Image (cartoon, rainbow, N blue to C red; front, side):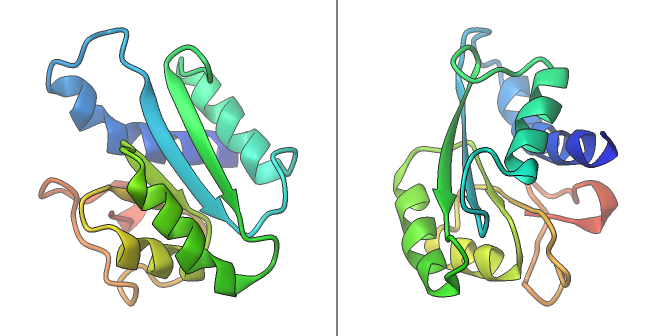
Length: 139
């Protein structure tokens, strides 16, 4: 429960400035997820969905999630991150250090939420819109 709320909270904080800029209530926020897990039924994916649902976001209503799975092959991260960078996403969730690094290389404009990253400073994290995100993590 705590992990789910934390993950969803990070995504919500990253997307909040977009809502504050006067977006229409009917806007569908687009979230990209790149992670090592092999399918949508894995616990982290379930936790992300449930946490977002607790915050009032639901797939097919006000969010769309683009999932990319490395399936245990770290060499796939640059390809998967590149695919996500080509979409007009509001935020990308990167599931580990390798996914964060690949996503940072693929986009300089889309906010990145780090999940399970062990060294945000070493990965070159920087403030989003001039402010840090919770727990010292930044996009």
